Image 1 (tube, helix red, strand yellow):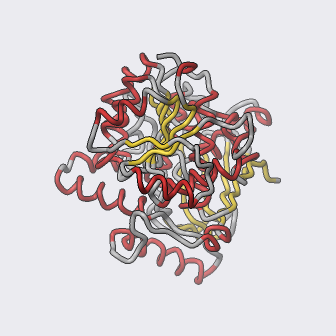
Image 2 (image 1 turned 120 degrees about the vertical axis):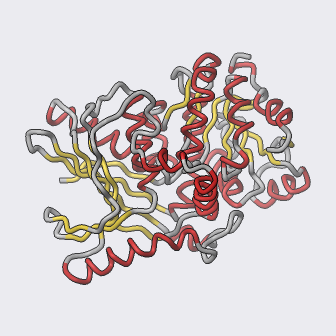
Amino acid sequence: MPDQSREFDIIVYGATGYTGRLVAEHFVREYGGKADGPKWAMAGRNLTKLQEVRGLVGAPDDTPLVVADADDPASLEAMCKRTKVVLTTVGPYQLYGDDLVAACAKTGTHYADLSGEPAWMHEKIEQHQTEAKASGARICFSSGFDSIPFDMGVFMLQQEAQKKFGKPCNRVRGRVRKMQGTWSGGTAASFKATMAAAAKKPSILKVLNDPFALTPGFEGPDQPNGLIPKYEKDSNTWAAPFVMAAINTKNVHRSNFLLGHPYGEDFRYDEMVLTSPGDMGKAAAQAIAGGMKAMLGDGGPKPGEGPSEKEREEGFYDLLFVGSTPDGETIHYGVHGQYDPGYGSTSRMLAETGIALAESDHEGGIGTPASILGEKLVERLREHAALTFEVEE
């Protein structure tokens, strides 16, 4: 079925959940009443709840509602046949995402999610890459805080390095300078589901520990160890492990792989959190390293829960990417986002990824934000999602 015959541009699947509702709010806020806005619908398994959420987010009464259930593959396929793009917030994806990815690959429907589950992604690439390429489905995992600011930050830094140096940076450090907010309940649930799956199937640990788990057939150089706190002379700051690095680094390497290695086949990349100089910074870095285990605890947010609107509005993140070439040339690139990273910013990024996918003419296949959408997505994020991307002096 050609795209032009689809009833909708975008369906938000999981619209009655916490993050899905925020995605729907974005479409109402940014495109409500605009003639050139996307034709979109809200989907979920309960029609009554969909009707309720439609009213709560201020969507017009004639905003279409679609009933589909992760436990009913036929309903998922029927939903996919009606739209160019499906945006799904129904996770953990390793528990609820298999049939939807299969339906999108089969029907040529473009897809984006918020997955930070590399073992599941590795499996889906093996299962559906060939079919998605044949059907024309553009399937884009990790289209939220993990991993768009990092994937696109490295992509844009390398674009600037080519302009400035005539070559890419073979070493890039991704650093979180400041952040206010938290990971989502869905992210925590996904992490726990992954650890539970690994306990039952030890081979999953190999995938989790492999920085090139998402680059089938390619094994790059040894990568920096971002799990041990360290002092960085150039910034006079201690750096600590970053909880999202395990998924972000894999996506960055997949982008490089799918784009034909414009960053080089010797590319090395890591991500850490910057604290402060001296003994206080060292202590903070060590505390962060020890506190990463808290994600497995019961004190964090649960799926369906999240911060208040005020907390989402007051959240932000400030990322630095430091690139260097083999000749010692360096470049600094900053990515800044308003709003809570795990909710407010993530919902905006997913929504804009959906519009970019609908407008793209990229070939089908399972890709990444950078490999499928590139600078076109950056333009949308700058204009509609309160992100900035810029070279720093």
